[in-house]
Length: 170
Image (cartoon, rainbow, N blue to C red; front, side, top):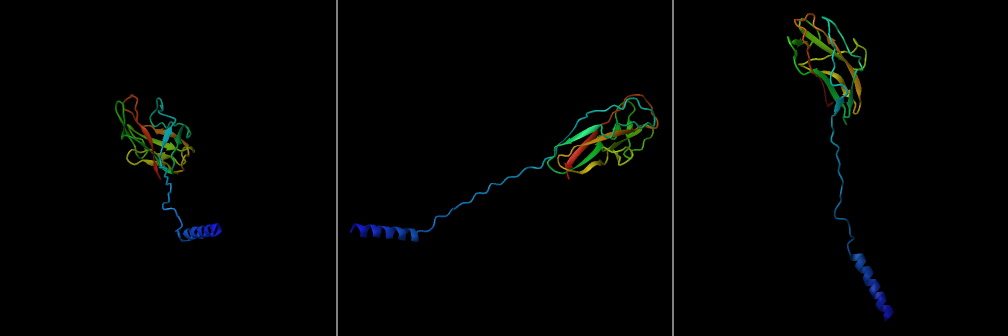
């Protein structure tokens, strides 16, 4: 009797297992991440003084004078410009967006680590020019500045203007 009862319980247990639905997961989780693209540059130089310049002089730094440290996580387009249309100080100088000097008119050029006269970029106020288009992420570079001094002056007071490098996703 005991053997029959044990066999019956075993058979009933197997039937319950066979007719019970299989237990399956009712949820599925997916971890989603995203890393924001960021643009970040710094320059190792904050000022430069060309000193006393003569009319029509073209003094310059080396083309590796300043270094841009680019910690951007994406490719960038980097431009160079001046932040005003005039050089401040005494009788102001007009900034020449053509790079061509005149009386009380000065121009500036930049060159990204090359040779002056080859691939120079005119530094403009109205429309910034590319100093490094399609700069790869985290790629540093060097550049220099060249002054195209006015062909004539009407005072001897120091002049100043700000040059700005701007990076944008590109």
